[in-house]
Length: 249
Image 1 (cartoon, one colour):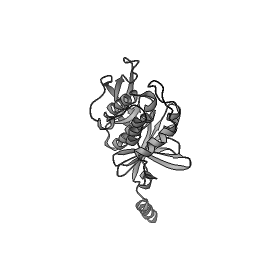
Image 2: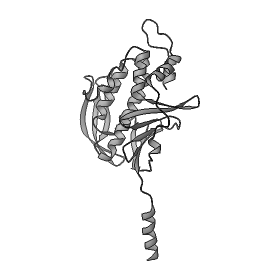
Image 3: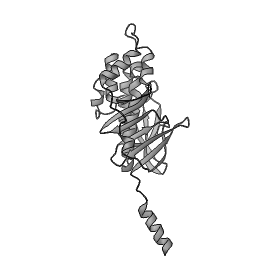
Image 4: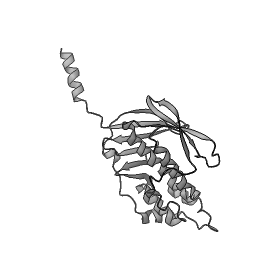
């Protein structure tokens, strides 16, 4: 009887885990982790402790360290800054959500699949590779309510990886963002065409401190100033030299 009472008291005293953690595997063996607090704010970790993303208040922020200082930038401000340094690429792209998938992208349902114990709809996505429009990749997306905050954070993370290379690939960057939005409109990812595959989704202790910005976000002007430091003048309208990309990574 005393043992039973002790076990009951131990369970009652254990703190409740306030959050969820999803881990995705990449083809090279690395992992991507999405931690979601109980208020829906999220942190996306790629394995580098000095670089991660935070999704909160409807905005996605990149956090990194440069010259020993923690730097924070809102992804929309990064896009606006790039548009000031090179010919406009993103323009009003961030206000274009809900405009529908690009005409070059075709998404067709093709059955269901379970991934890491979660049921999902399989979609054949054509047009991801513009040079091979007849080839498709399988994306498995879930409508499970608990996974949707993970999906929102993942979508913003994918967009955040595209924006910095806009200075190098031009209008193709905006097209890639539109593609990502069209795919994520189908739900939270269980398998993103083999690039990110869910391996676990479980309760975790995700505190508010973990999803709090560690510094004040840079203004557009501050980001522009940083970009111009590594930008060389393009010739005949060509894209800026690779030094620009090093400032964006």
